Amino acid sequence: MTTSLPILDDCDPRLKLKVENRKRNIFVTQLEDNRHRKEENVNHLPVVTETSSRVLETGVNTLQKTLILKKQFELDNVTEQVEHKRREFKNRMEALARRRSELKLKQQETAEMVMKFEKFVADNELKRHKALRKYEASLQLNVCKQREIEDLADQLKQLVARKHVLEQKMSKYKIYEDYLIKTIDQWPSLYPSNGSESLVMPIIRRHETLSITHRDLLQRLGRLEEEVEQSQRQLLAMTQEHSIKTLMANNELSELRTELETLKEKNKQAEVNLLMEQGLSRQKVEEEGRMLMAINNLAEQCYVSAYGPLMNMNVLTMMDMVKEYILDKADTERRARRLMESGSAVTNRTARKNKRERGSMKGFGSKTQIKSQ
Image (cartoon, rainbow, N blue to C red; front, side, top):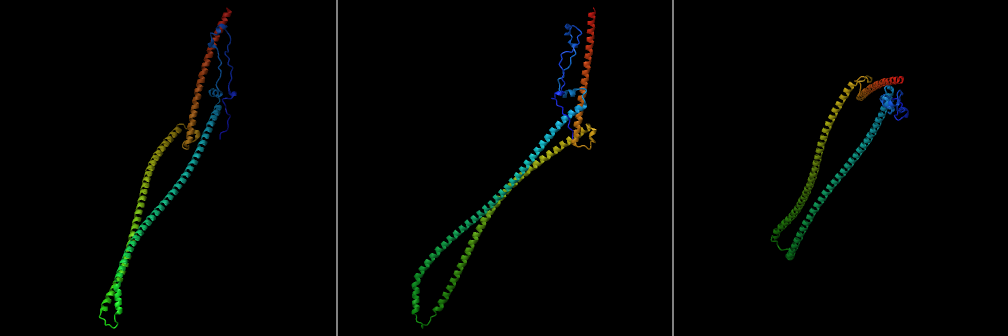
């Protein structure tokens, strides 16, 4: 933790050097007529117009501690600005992380809503298919029942017509039956039988047997016809159900094929993105490696023993060491240049002063000779 140091403000009036702007500082040794012709020997005093910080930096006898304090103040300002930027960057990153988490939550909610909606649509589609199958089955059953009704109506018409024909025949042969019954009634009981009954009764019994057999066969034929019709209805229903299932299977197959194509496109895009990311990451690793090698080379060239062994330093410490080394070299160069400039200026001023003194001594000697004459 660095201790607080006094702040040097360039605007402080106490740190400014004020010198009166005198025009000349002349020792009169000659007449006023000759005074204006020899202004090159006049000693002008310089007027300081620079700030205190500039005077401190350019002064020859400036203390190293004062310059260190000023540089420390500038370093503290830069450090404070860097810290402010870091806090601002951290706040922005936190805000970005919050927004990213909120976006993820919204995406999850949207995905859940989409899944629920897809499930709802699938259920409705299944219910629709079931209702459609039920409607088609009921429609087919109604058609079959209508056909049965029509068939039964035709049979009823046929039976009614047959009944009418039989009634006509019965009415036609009724007179013969009545005649035979009356004849039998009038027949004497003691009249010997001539064997006609023995011939008629087997025929009647055979007719009755055949009639019963015929009736059984008709009933069996009706049952078989009903079974055939029922089997045909079942076959028709199964055929329709098979066609509906085939249609649904084809629809599902087309949807699955579409989904498969979409997944293939997504996989291709993901592979392309992965290859691009791998290439970028490889390039980034190579750039980082070159940067670390450059930092190590600079650290070896700008080694400062105060930082300890070079092998134990991390990257930030090496960069700080290089920065300090470069700043130290730049400050040393500036100081050497200023000392050289100040030395040359002092030499020039001394030479001019000596020249002016020799000129003034010559003028004083000439004036003394004139007065003695």
